[in-house]
Image (cartoon, rainbow, N blue to C red; front, side, top):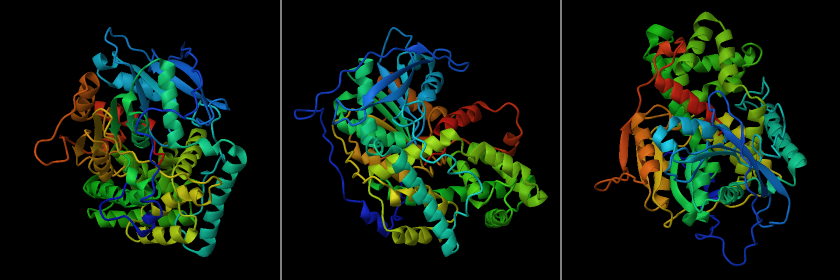
Length: 530
């Protein structure tokens, strides 16, 4: 969600430079008195994987400026601390916006070193509108049902059909949730987090956020710097690009990462037999895409579904062996079955995805201004597509409801912060979903923060995913509050080597390696909600 250097387009001026300045101190005089917060009633909701997991619900005000008004319900989970030393609650968020965070509590508690996890109550939560929180949004069930029109609008009729589809989605959201949409936004969710803090009886929170969760954390820190004890932000959103420019910038980064995958396949020509030249392999992929326009694989994988299937590979290279195997089977053997299976595994939307997308659009469309003139979208996306064709138009239609959103947009807050305690920012240098520049930008905005990078890493989410070096920095920070500090003029405070790329055997391996297990588990939570 962040531009690579020099790749901001002219449309960026529509949002850049307009900010809402949030208070840098706790709520003061003139703000409405907060609603009394009930005590949380935790009940056991153990799973086989997370036997200590507990659940609770919490009612929060829909409109935080009207404490006596309507409430909505948040669903929470907890893995309680077991050590004598208690460092307070550790709230965790997997991003999105629209990602369910309830399962993250068990995963984080199980993935941190036991001694560290034992000192925290690890708290997961479904943000307003998400998952088990109520109401849970689902604007238009089946919006991504196959086979969709080709994402690349090659003629006027195709473009009109896609525009109408986006308009219908926005209209359905407005029809079903007119009273809720004005309050589905990042600032409202950040204020919910402070209600969670109060309900937990904690003077301060600790926080671990991934992807969009880094932005949510930064907004909370701006609202309440004195209520932050420790904050780790993994794979940072660039606050300067929220959200139109960030999505444009993703298009370039995803195309680059897709080319990395093509090069990986070419380097293993003895296995996949798709050619030893990355450009030739990429050309074969686009020929596959063209063929699917005429005859979708399994009656369900057309060009748009193909992009949905291969986009997760730009988030996590652990998927590459299976994706390459499906690619080779289709091209070399005219066998569409592995491609259909890959779509069902990585790209197909279910009810949870419908809910996640409904919240995603609701938050992003409300958070910040988007062009309302479709001519701006058309020009910008054709310009980007000419250089980065892999997912530009797919991403454009994913966000297109914001051009027709039934609720006015807010302006994004200024998240610069010189009052919050040292924040740990963790970033891969080749991350496509939240490119590296976002980590640098957030590091500059949060004075006293520390930036730890995974050199050469292209995965989205770099802690608790198999890289011991990155995990050590996170664990040390949560255990002690210490952050690494650079020497000299470097903006990077510490660096770790990336993990090696996967090998083809991973597609058939019965027992995955420890790194593969950790990586696939984390990315199961992060998903690929953009």
